[in-house]
Length: 368
Ligand code: NAD
Image (cartoon, rainbow, N blue to C red; front, side, top):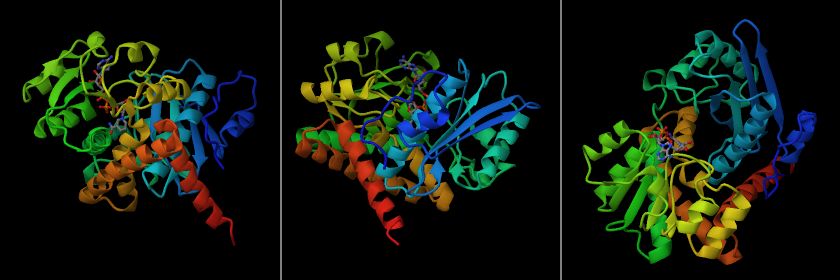
């Protein structure tokens, strides 16, 4: 049984790995090392009650093994919750490769990593994440079938961002309905922070529905790509939080919902694609509730990407993936309902929904 409140797996470097795993009940952690390619990686399987663990591989220049372990434990647990609430029959896992992807990554390293994934015989299915591209997954695919996030010519779903953006749009409509009684976004002032892969597709949906859209990005070319096709206002990155808006859509970085932003934020809804939006889940989740700001939990909102990957596992069908992403609308409303009934922050309502589903399936698996 996983616990309702995340406990930080951060411990001293001397804490035994199994003790760190026990904090949030991780099933398995695999350390991978290969001298010839320089590969150093960690694969964490958090929970496989609902099915094989699925989650991307992140490549990052971690300060060391302890930092990488902390990250992979946190990320794999997050995948368990995301997959469970999205109604997918997969568990939570994640992998990290230690090193700078711009200088260390190559075909041999990715293929060696693929062989480690293959060694898990399907208990863990990998995909791309930060620092890893579809091309890298093609190398992994040469060594294992337990990989998704592949290009269409290999039977994959390609870039998941359009599906993620569609799911965010659905969650945003559900949020507006919860706040106003109607799910129309027409005329609403929405600020999209980060117009990269997901943010740009989200802007398309919002403009089509007649929202008043403002965008912010740190890269001029990203802004130009959006302003060339849409009438949107451009806001400087450091003026985002104080900008007058109805809906704040974080689609860039995590931890943007914090003491500083909440002190000036004017929006009544927060709904965006970025992972880990609350700097401190417990502190800022509660603060949002007290301030009356409706927060659509990030891992519920941005599940479109993993839904797309899930359809790769069971046989890719884009329409089916989009149709399942559309259900994020109902899931978001259910979370708001539970949050109101139980008078708890929305992130906690979402966590509890995930735990309830996992517990119910765990009970049938042990009942004979
Ligand atoms: P991306 O890198 O393509 O886009 C992020 C954009 O944010 C970039 O254009 C970047 O310049 C901009 N940005 C960075 N710092 C900024 C700042 N301080 N202010 C304003 N803009 C800033 O990434 P993406 O794939 O669009 O993903 C966006 C977020 O959604 C990430 O947090 C990601 O983890 C999450 N997410 C993405 C997917 C997916 O399918 N791509 C799925 C689930 C979650």
